[in-house]
Length: 46
Image 1 (cartoon, rainbow, N blue to C red):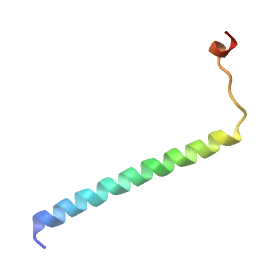
Image 2 (image 1 turned 180 degrees about the vertical axis):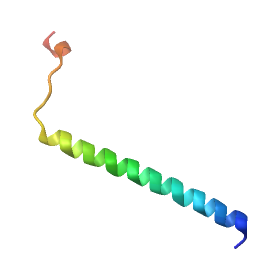
Image 3 (image 1 turned 30 degrees about the horizontal axis):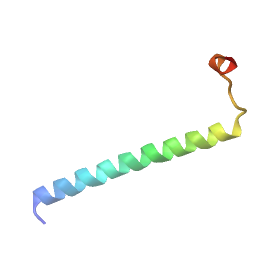
């Protein structure tokens, strides 16, 4: 493999890892919200 192919492969892999971390963090955050009591807004009273 030539150096430019390795560079593109590294960039692609790095972006994939960043995307996977963001998805996992969002998924964990949503799981925590499900366990909490529902929050009501002042706008819901109208």
